[in-house]
Length: 259
Length: 230
Image 1 (spheres, rainbow over the protein chains, first blue to last red):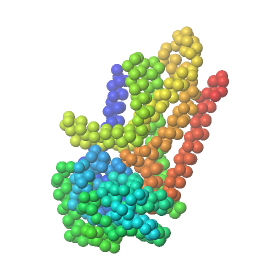
Image 2: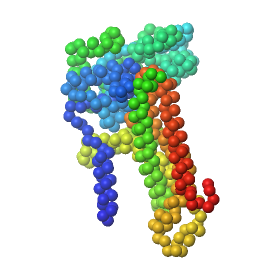
Image 3: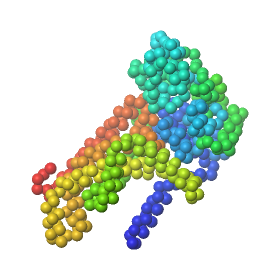
Image 4: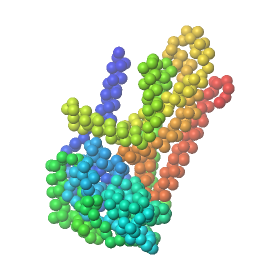
């Protein structure tokens, strides 16, 4: 009998040790998904960098909190939020109707159109007729899927875990174009002279409010209105005190708050 | 190459995490396997059915699906339970624990089959002889069954271990930072994916080669007393 009791005690202790109480005061648990340069980047020393990470730190400071980052695969980011693994997602997540069924968003903290990137001599246009039968890569579970379904319905859409993989297949010639956010695409084109030499946006910037929504926002669980108000106030403050502009200029040489 | 060198400590840390996850998962899976095999061999009709259901279920569901189900589904279930009883608002299911438990849950089923198969290879006459000299069930297991069981089960356990080690890569989806997670994320962050993928491959190759050496040594040890060498 004694044995069984001590076994139970051991199990109970193990359970407590494996589960840690959270909701520490003054901590905002922020989810990011590294591997999306220049927004979410893993540094060689294991720390995180990029526009999203630095902006998250600005936001946390304005809320008198410290950010506690969780780096998670993009596919697990909304399930993780819903399971309360973290409080907010600050990972360049586009605000759109599909996601708003599951989560709430703050006001947008930056806005960027999308672009269709292809070989310079690709010779097709970024509309429904031009892209018919063309293989176009997108990051899966993003607004770009929506855009292709709506405006390039006859294209052969290929979904990738991240846009980095889509770029690899574009370089390898397996797909004809990628539909991506313009701002990180500019960074990709600049990252290697070969990219700029061979590839370019083949259209003007693409806008669609229904798909791309109104920009990138901070996601949180539904019904957390107090948190939402706090986040919106913090975003507002970063606009007013110039810290946003400094950050945006440092990364992109311009203000990306609005189109 | 310079990117790889810069990230060496992170890759090393990821390798450590992978190994820790692999060994913890293996230990727990072996325990589950022994329990499962005992249930299948010596259990009553209920225990036998439960063990049978378990191995059938696990071997038919994709690992990734199970991992997502246990990690996110389990967490949501615990949150709901806490809300419903009012006992807690939120308790974190540690990603490492969830990873180990999921891996052990999956590979426990394969280990069950390994042990059950191995048990069948032990000549029946030995049990009769043990009973004839008045050994208890416990003595029989400790002195006759287990030492030989390991010898017969090792080749199959070895195969399971190799697969298990690679399955640990799936944990990156639930936010655990193993070798593959660090490697892939670093590859994307530096826009140099192939260098990192090759490095991951090389590290896994080393781990597998070392495993093979260790398994060969273990096999020699556990089959020392066997009349016909394996």
